[in-house]
Image (tube, rainbow, N blue to C red; front, top):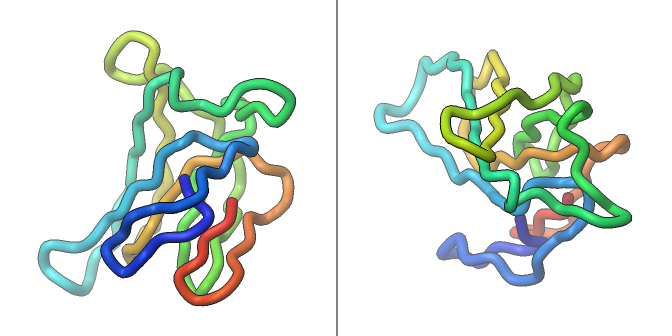
Length: 118
């Protein structure tokens, strides 16, 4: 996860605060009428550790839409399909853009066009 993305989707400054250090850039193959349940999976080594550690029990999938990341209810991550991996699902996805996994207690914010903060 990064604070900014350029027009090519390349990130700049890494965010190291209560999240998984990954961003999922998701698009539809056929535009329109999607209503999916998305499952994201990551390795435990991708999780932020230390004083601002990611908390699997408070995890949620955050969707960047309308200029900001949202904060749905937390779901808690479960074991993934390979050793040392975890996964989380979110239902009702009808639009596509960047997604991230976070455990922040406050809503992640965005600032400025093309800037993403979590």
